[in-house]
Amino acid sequence: MIDTVLFDLDGTLADTAADLGAVLNRLRGEAGLAPLPAETIRPHVSKGVRGLLSVGFALVPGDGRYAGLHQRFLDFYGESPCVATRLFEGMAELLERLEAGRLRWGIVTNKTSRYTLPLMEALGLARRAVCIVSGDSSPRPKPAPDPLLLASTIAGANPAQCLYVGDDLRDMQAARAAGMGAIAAAWGYLGDDLPLEEWGADTIIQTPSDLAGLLG
Image 1 (tube, rainbow, N blue to C red):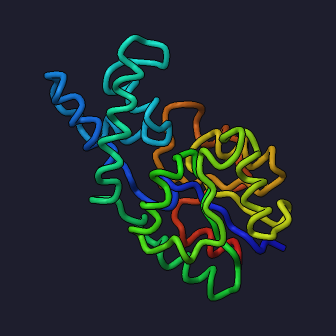
Image 2 (cartoon, rainbow, N blue to C red):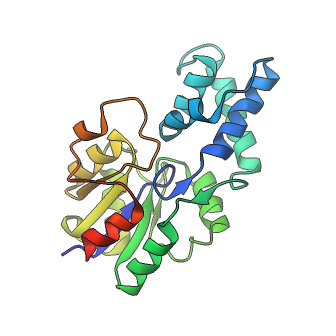
């Protein structure tokens, strides 16, 4: 029986694309480049700063300008991580339903704790989650199973009784490797990797309320 639900943060629990996109376009403005439209940026958000600098500047780690822009991105984002960020529609109700049903829920994200914790505080969720595991909480981030297994340990849960909900291929890979149920969130950013149907998810859900239906 499932007793714990773990969520990815960006693109699954919360829509952070507007704030991250604003930082990217701020950097582009400094470089004399025109802002990118939201629909261009959005599919890359789940890839973190690496994905955003790729779409915004055609840079990858190791390129000459990458390290400097990466640090500036993080500094700018740290100034205002939760201006336009909101929970996805239906997510607040889902969390309330989980709590009412005495199911534990938590967060596992590759975003580092410097940004994860203030964001969760701003959303009013930091004290409600049974665990908040960030990208720097374990030796290996997703798609390795380490952060999910750490989350289950903190929550006092058996991995086999956990679900992990995410909007990226690596989320499904991490869930599988950790022995958890893998749930793909079709409302998320999804990216441009394999089609969603080829991620190996146990279930694809279209809205947060679909998860409530699965749990009964």
